[in-house]
Image (cartoon, rainbow, N blue to C red):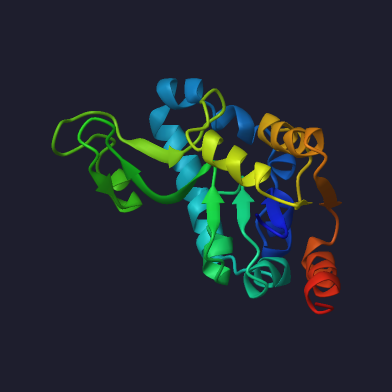
Length: 202
């Protein structure tokens, strides 16, 4: 049983210099399965630009506080900042920008391969992102659900509840009678203060 479980969205990384999807215009359309299938080259250009932004960004005090107090995290973010902050128990339910892969032979590639080809060198299938796109199912849904079920409190940070993933898991917690605490604005300051109020008194 988790004393507290964090469920994080794009807002937690805004102070790290990563814009939310609301700040990025029609980005959701370009991160859909249909767009990937029909405009693969442009899709990967978008993803590579996102990867550059994420590589430059640094974990902010909210990420660091969750790591410091060893709070397990379910994140919808693909920026990798929770792991870079030092969090050990992180479930990236929308995947990550760590690599692209071939679904057929399972070979993984660094993003640099996209500068020369969009296809697997071995079996010549189109390379897939390690990211859950709009229109995809969530492969880690069952694992995330179990974490929600095992939590005494869910701290929801930086989500606008536009993405169905956010309200599905939040509603799941509420339906069980689990305490749900919401922090959106100024997460970089409020998360640390909230966790201090819990753990520093114990």
